[in-house]
Figure 1 (spheres, rainbow, N blue to C red):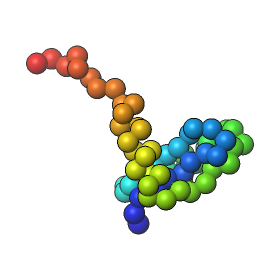
Figure 2: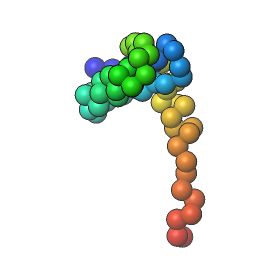
Figure 3: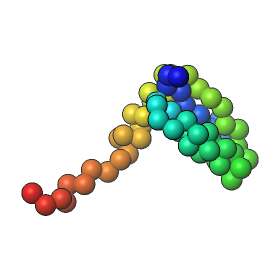
Figure 4: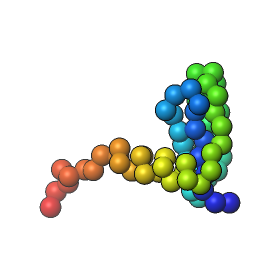
Length: 67
């Protein structure tokens, strides 16, 4: 199916699909719309890559694990 993302045209919210459960991505997009009333639209593969990169950059690394 390829990569794509749903992005909000009213704020910085976004979710990307790159495989796995497509329904969870659709549910997230619908949930954002229902909670905010914002316009959510489907974007192309480049947007999905950008969303994934942003998400990975924001994911905290657990460096407190025992050695």
